Each structure stands twice: as structure tokens, then as C-alpha cells.
Image (cartoon, rainbow, N blue to C red; front, top):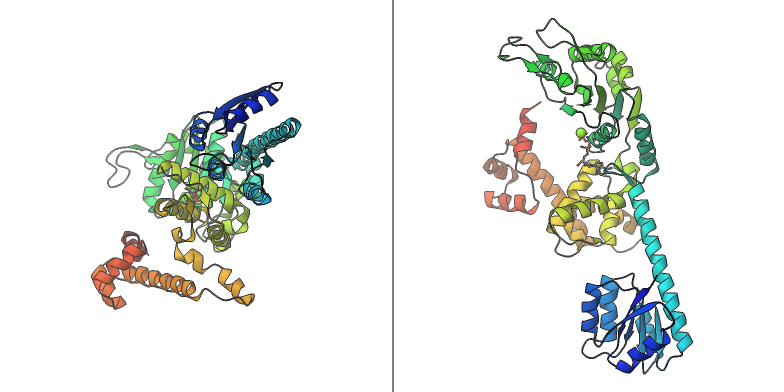
Length: 470
Ligand SMILES: Nc1ncnc2c1ncn2[C@@H]1O[C@H](COP(=O)(O)OP(=O)(O)OP(=O)(O)O)[C@@H](O)[C@H]1O
Ligand SMILES: [Mg+2]
């Protein structure tokens, strides 16, 4: 396969010489008489190798090299120069040049290095293909996970998707239970049929019953029209019952019947209707404890637990943090039309040390926010919330190692975590009333407003709800 080489030199004789030297090879030589012209060409077409003079007019060869390495890191770069010194050679190599040749160079010497450089580029290309293949193996149906346990779960999902057995997904909040349930549906032959989700927590019993099984007209006060339940809606498809730990005894009993008999009876109806649904249930509670406490029927548990997927919390699969960050950065950068290429090592070390009580959802939120607020192309510690930096064990390890502590940073972080918590508590106590909250906190309403903005505290709807609900 022919290779294309870009030669940047203001001396036309050198370009001619290179063309002559390589005339017995299958190379295509494209020349540029300045770095600026070469850059234009690089942005327009693909090259396999760049050969550039060090002393170019206006923009120097080293500057050109820097540009090329930043934008086309996989294209090898050979520097040539008329007045070689060791220092410039070292300089060029340090900036990422593949090799350095002094004029006049030998024909064979030149050819050998060009060949070597091209071989290396080829190797990089293969490596990249390999890397992409690996990273796609690190995800399954939008679920990112290279951790061994996650990989095992992916295999399990592939094996069990197409059966009709019920599945129980266990995992802390934000670990991806819903994501897994959708993957099971998509991977099954029911894929084209409905996938119906019902979040069971917080729905009153009668309403939940009617949601699930439907009702006939006049079945209860307010049932002015008959209504199809989710089981009928999901016929031939999949139903995802979220937080089954919250089911009342009555609903549990009815559900048991559905699983055993594959039929439902709408509220107020005398007839059973056959339904063909695949049931997937999720819980973030330990149902075994609920069974002990007689809050969950043991027989129902075993009906559900035919297949159990236990999703480990994020803190137990820290090897997934890097691929998840890459995934979310890409996702949110595209969504927000921003060019973000990565995350700084220091930021990453904070993320790796944090315990992630809100699991992947929390990480997703942190990255989304970071992508929005960052000014540069990489995410830096300034772009992530203070509590992630405070809880970091970095301070502890510095302390243990007897190294000086960045005291100011430590104090700032600690203060903001405490402040944030105090404000959230005060607002929840006053059901979102800012003036009362400010009084409680002993600050002016203006100061409170400023802090709310600064800490990006969500408006108090959720805290007041939390306050009224229990
Ligand atoms: N492995 C993963 N790869 C990519 N995204 C993930 C992964 N796990 C979770 N997410 C994302 O995190 C968020 C939370 O996931 P999901 O809703 O499935 O969690 P959950 O276990 O159902 O949480 P909850 O118990 O709070 O309902 C979603 O936006 C989801 O897309
Ligand atoms: Mg969920």
C-alpha cells in the first residue's frame, strides 16, 4: 500500500533529493515550503509520515513539531537540519520527534529511518484498533464495565435474556438496575414488544394495584372509566417492577398469583385475563431482612429469585471509574457541544479515592457538571465538588507520610462541606423558606442566596418534600 509523506522544507533541492532517494519505493511525496503550509495540508489530507526541516521561515520546525504532536500524535515526525548539534537533536526527540537527521544525509540512512518510522506508525494504528476493540468489550448495551464481576453479569444477561424466568436485580441506588433490566429486554426475543416500568415506592396501595392490574368502571370511588393495567399493557413484553421491597402484603399476594397462573384480574372484575409477560424486579434493600421481619413473602422472593443479578456498588469496582469517566465525558461533551479531551491525573485520583455512596448516578452527575463548568479541554480539580476532594484520603496519606499538608485547601474544602450541609438542613427544616433558614443560620438572606448559588444547592423542593413525606 502506498504511503504518503509530507516533506516540509524551504529548500526545493532537499525536496527533490528526497523524491529521488525514495523513487524506488511506493511513496507519494507531498511538499510544503513552510510550516504554515504544511499544517494546512495536514488538516486537509492524511499523512503517514512528516519529514521537516528544523529551520523553516517564520514558524520553526520545533513549533511545527509541537503542533503536529498535539493534533496528530500518531503520525511520526522526522527532523532534518543543516547544522546539527546534540542539543537540538535532544530537543527534537524530547518534543516527540521520531528521529533527527543532519544534512547531508546518506541515502540509505534516510531510507532506513523512514521505513522504521512508518512501521512504528503502523503499529500504533493496530494498537488503536485493539484498544477500541477492548473498550467496546468494556461495555454491553450501554452498560460500561470492565470489572470482572460486571463482565460476568454481562455474560449472565446474554445467557438468561431469552428465557421467561423472572429475574431479581439487587444493587444499591444508582448502580444501574434499570439499565440492566432494559438490557435484558433488548437482548430477548421480546425486544420489539413493550417494556413497561413501574416504580413501586411511594405509590399508595390501591393506586398501585390499579396501576398493575387495571380496574373496571366504578370499581372504586373515582374509577369513572375502566383502565388497562400494566400487565395488559406489557403483554408479550417485559415488566420492570422497581423497588419491590415496598410492596404491600396484598399486592404481594396478587403478584404471586400472576407469576404462578400467568393471569390477572382487574379490580372490580370477575374475570381473569391471561397475560404473557417477563417479570424483572429490582430492589436496593436486602429482601432477606424484610423476610425475617415478615414484611416480604418468602414464597414470592423465591419466585422472583430464580435468577439473581447482584450489581456491586461502585466502590467495589474502582477499575470501572476510568472507563465510566471516559464514557460520560464523551456523552456530555457531545451533548453540550464542548471539546473536552480528558481529565487531569489529580482529578482522577480524587475520583478514585472517593467512596461514591450514590454510585454510578453520582459519578454521572459529577462529570456532567464538570463538563459544563470547565473552561479548558481537560477536567481539573476545580471542576469537581468540594466534598469529593475532602473525603479524599489524599490528605490522610500525606499526613501519614509526614509530608506538609496543603492546609488552606484542606480548610476550604472542609468549611464548604460543613456549610453546604448546614444550609441544606436549615432549608429542609424550614420547608424551603429562605428567610427563616437564613435566620436559623444566623446569616443575612443575601448571604444565604450567595451561598446557594456558590454551592449550586438545588432549589428546596426535594428537601421540603422529604420533610413532609414521612
Ligand atoms: N455501568 C454503567 N454504565 C453507564 N451508565 C450507567 C451504568 N450504571 C449506571 N449508569 C447510569 O447511572 C444512572 C443510574 O442508573 P439506574 O437508574 O439504572 O440505577 P438504579 O440502580 O436503577 O438506581 P435507583 O436504585 O436509584 O433507581 C443512569 O443514568 C444510568 O444510565
Ligand atoms: Mg432505578
